[in-house]
Amino acid sequence: MARILVIDDDEQTRDVLKQMLEVEGFDVLEAGDGEEGAKVYTEKRPDLVITDIIMPKKGGLETIIKLKQEYPDIKIFAISGGGRVIKADFLTIAESIGALKAFEKPFNRAELIKAVKEALA
Image 1 (cartoon, rainbow, N blue to C red):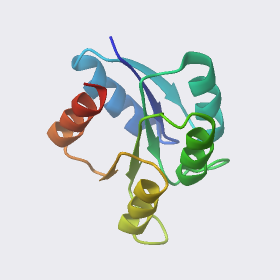
Image 2 (image 1 turned 90 degrees about the vertical axis):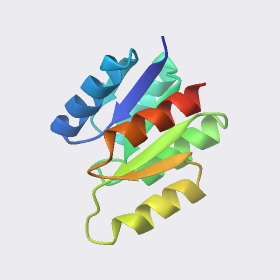
Image 3 (image 1 turned 180 degrees about the vertical axis):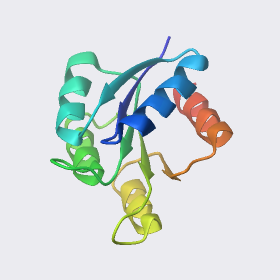
């Protein structure tokens, strides 16, 4: 069973993602920010990371950069609901620094699950 780490400061988003992924048979780990997420990744080495972009302490872009530097083969998806700047900009940047895929919130469940399965195939 593949293990996925969901990093998001919004507990409701983490819960929704966890339920979606567990229904598909994935083991899901959670973290509330990039700092915690990096620690969980180092300890548990999940097969895929799904990270929000805008978070307190350490945001998603910083987290992607740090994890890609330390673990170049890591598989990361970025998600964002936006913020002060256009969310598409954040998602484009996330892909340019190493995220395999980027999804706008609210994301399409079927598209996200398909992308997860393809990334882990």
